[in-house]
Image (tube, rainbow, N blue to C red; front, top):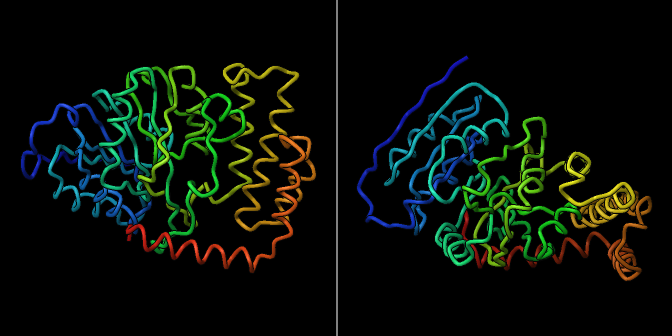
Length: 329
């Protein structure tokens, strides 16, 4: 058992800004020594700096705490590192939120990145809509080698109604989300769930609108240790969370099975997008009644017939285009 904490005073006082005094940023860190510096630098380099940056290292077994301590010494605003034994991501999120203050709250995974305008644009969006509980948007997908390999802007569609989105098993990407803090104070992340974000969005969907910004302002990194890389696990966690929160989602005994078939069929499309044709076909055949229309089934079938070599060529062309447009390395 261990625990230590460092608080850092600003290297230099930033100009007083009423907006940044209300933004609290939190980073839950775990075994991301290869990525944590880029994550923290992306927060330090925000055009609208936050009120405070809190980092809790959740018992990393690598060099993360030492790297975090070094990087935070360059931070021009208030920041703090807490390093302790491992308790899990959701417990760490609950602790981080419990230590927060201000009007706005955002957390960034220790392997993810924000572009420099992220906080400024999210504050602007929520300031214009006091009825909203959160704002979110699109993200680039980055691998462990800092190579862009996909983007939610290319193939994800986010329904405008939050409850409808969540019924379909779709959730905002966590690295894009920015919360109005007072609206989520009474909720907690489920510490028994391995997929931290989906169920939390379900819990808060009655608290206000989910505002969508189509611009790409953040990066979601995918690598071997990601839960997001295990599509079967993600699907199982989404279905279990729906079962625990039927009433919140407005699901009755009569429409619950129908909704879950829709979720499974949509995930079949996700499997296919990632090139897992066998898993995609198996899931689609078992849940074809979950398709929104015959047109959706035909579209899925047509995509199944496209050779992997053609898909890979298209992806290569697209990736080169994205790498020339964005610099995230």
